[in-house]
Figure (tube, rainbow over the protein chains, first blue to last red):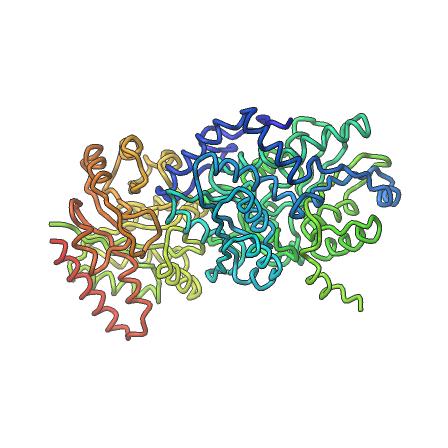
Length: 398
Length: 238
């Protein structure tokens, strides 16, 4: 049974070196301290994890397979394994986190949960867990994304959630998170905020990492079973960074394994249209944490851009900022075009349609230097169903 | 005499207006100015101040504008209010040296709670926030070295709401923990000021002033309305 392990744990106030922390209005500090205490109580508690384990297996369908992708392996002269988080209930890794957080919320006696969402995957995963556990659910989503992701909005409503279209700022994920925080400050006493990635104030980056690290814990066992040795590389796409930290963490202590995180290169790093917070940003404070941010000279936050709504965020989880400076993870970028090519490539070679987010990780297989027969795991964090309408418009097959 | 602190979003609609407004507010009895740095993501603020922040940025606000404004003012205490990223990105020590040069009395940073503020507390006065969600024990901790004044948030929420909370207990905890003057902010306007000023040493008014700035009135009408509101609030709290 999975129980988290302390791997690169932050200090008691949530600092991964200078990153992380808790940069929130005072009203929320008691709430975060309460959450930290509640989480510390269950963090290594077998009873709690037995309950999580039950839902992971029976509801989400874990463990997710580590699939040997023979066709692309032959083409690249390598052994490529796909960690199939796309096969999870609701279609992505997001649900691992929402199930565990909603169980914790329930344990804390909270009856209402809120969430921010970009493409709608985390919103759907939160609405799903809220329906399962009988919690009231409000989801904040940028007005632009509400229009772009009509189907996910309907899914959330069908699951019983209220969806708030956020009209402030750039009307995307960043602003959805601003409004979720404002709502949370206002309803601090009875509302639990289900943050969707390894970002936000402590304890979220550590806690969400623990909940997603089931991915790497399984993958490690699965690859040892299949190959009797560790992989050479582990690749994952990064918006906030939860699927990446999730699969990396159980390989981070193995120096022979290279973990590679892929940020959104958008239209190219030489343009203003990308989501490459590490490569093009600098340290700063947003949404309760210190991390790398896309910002101007005065520290005003800039808008991110990516073909993929899940990577369209001007920040990144603080633990990634730490690994970036510590050089314990390698970071690179993939453009919209490379991701789109990989989206078609995997669909036609393996019969697996990846999400636009995961397509960035897949695309890196063609960018990285491959030594013959090396073993590579790619985290296929989500399926592409949600991207069909956008893909249809761009690819124009007719 | 209870004090009145006025918040203004710097450079909305432009820096000259901010300077004129401060001078006019001073005349009308305002004791201290909370000079706001417009930020792209003001999470502690309600719709009114968010809008002023956004418009100021769209009008080309630059960080140096706050120092230009403070340079043009004398005879009233100015505190610089802003979100931590603007301070951090520009360099906190640089901001302190600029602030000292321009006779700014302290910083008000709503997203820099006690635990994160500790590292900066010795460099320059930082206003301590207390929220109604705080326990007695936490209030004692965070007010250990309170400087200038204490900023009591009137309710769990963002600026400019109509929320109300019973603050009797939290105020008594603050008084036990510190002798520093206690000011209350959030949701203070002409209607609520008298009630909110009970048991504290002053009020902080933001959204009610910014509402005037956002109206379609002429420059001079706006200045006049700011003054009227300031003097009526000053009267009602005393």
